[in-house]
Image 1 (cartoon, rainbow, N blue to C red):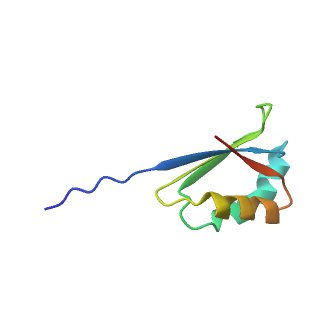
Image 2 (cartoon, rainbow, N blue to C red; image 1 turned 90 degrees about the vertical axis):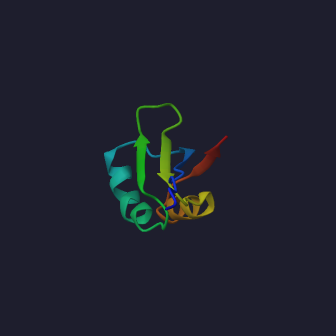
Length: 77
């Protein structure tokens, strides 16, 4: 028997999402990105940090989804 442990990857992005309305706008876009298991936006942080987690999350797909929702997004290293 094999015991495979899931490797959760977490990515952080700087955005311009300022409020709950912004989060509500981006929600359907991020919820449709394959590989995302969990995401959150800290609208109180100066950089409005979007944190995305998932086993196979793809930074390019996250960036594309947020851009299509009408917001700016930059990966944080």
